[in-house]
Amino acid sequence: SSINCLGGWTAGNVIMDAPAAADWTYALYGPGEAVLPASTLKQMLPGSNQSYGLAMFNFNGRYANGTDGEAYGHLGDTYGFTSTVTYFPARNIAIAVVTNVEEAQQATPP
Image 1 (cartoon, rainbow, N blue to C red):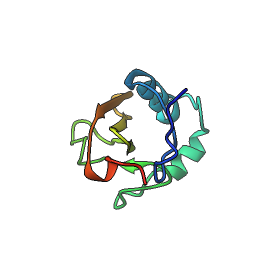
Image 2: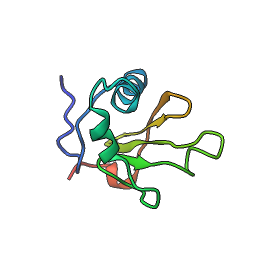
Image 3: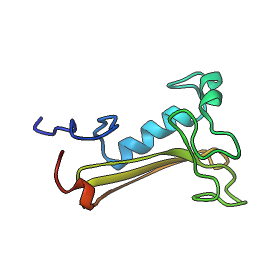
Image 4: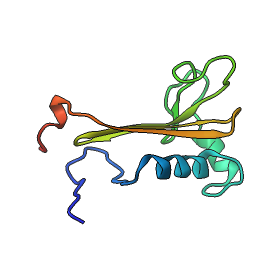
């Protein structure tokens, strides 16, 4: 592939479309321990007053309200793209939003 993400700062260098990102998010955070044991996932969760845990953002209040309960996931960007993946435990659903973006700091690799 001619795609090179090496210019990203802390990029995980994951390349996938939105449906695959939603599937991965569900496998990681959802029930069934497909990727991680429940005990590990619990350690990753941010505290109620914290916005970030271990590779997991607390999106409560940002994407969830009183009817949706908790929401957590991750966001990121690289040159020309930005994404957010979110898991809603009360609804047992994962959503991924991937879009093109051009910001000044992304305009040219370092």
